Amino acid sequence: MRKAFTLMEVNLAIMIMAGGILSIVSLYSLGYRENRQSREDVAGAAYAEAVIAPLVVAASSTNLPWSVFSKVKNHPADAGNHVGWATYFDNDGRVNGAQSLASTAFSETMSELRASATSSSLPSSLPTGSSYDKLIPGLVIRHKQGEAVIHISFRAARAEKELLSMPVYYTEVRFQGNPNL
Image (cartoon, rainbow, N blue to C red):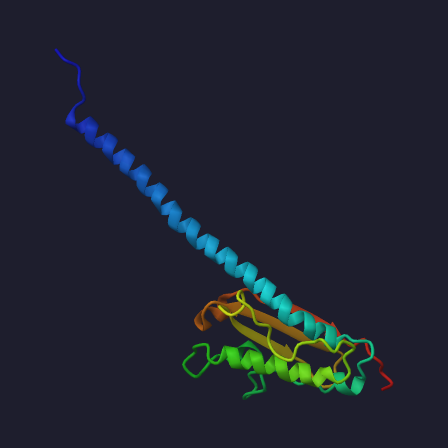
């Protein structure tokens, strides 16, 4: 009598091998997705730093007079008491106009603060570059008139529909200027 494998044993071995190969192949797509998400997270954090840092420098300048700091407006502009991230929604609940809203918020706030800022090298528009051009920015600046704190929050996503699901980078800037001016 010859010893050999039965058809059942061969089929079982093939099934086990196929399961192992399929699980290894699925790891490639998972790894690719996680790698892409990691790149986007790092680019979003770098973009947030490039946007928030000049705003903080301008708003926390020691020669900034209270008269300028106290008049910094909310951005995006108050649209029916929806100042903040709710402003980025249209009537259908979709993200709408993130690029233009963020650009306007940045440039208008910088122009409000620029007159008294110590550094003339502060940018007047959102930063650009190869890693930023693929991201849609969202910037919210909240400031109650007369309060000594400005709240700045920023998000960046690959697509507008993903903007509100991305991490928020947030900071507060307290008045450090000259209260007598």
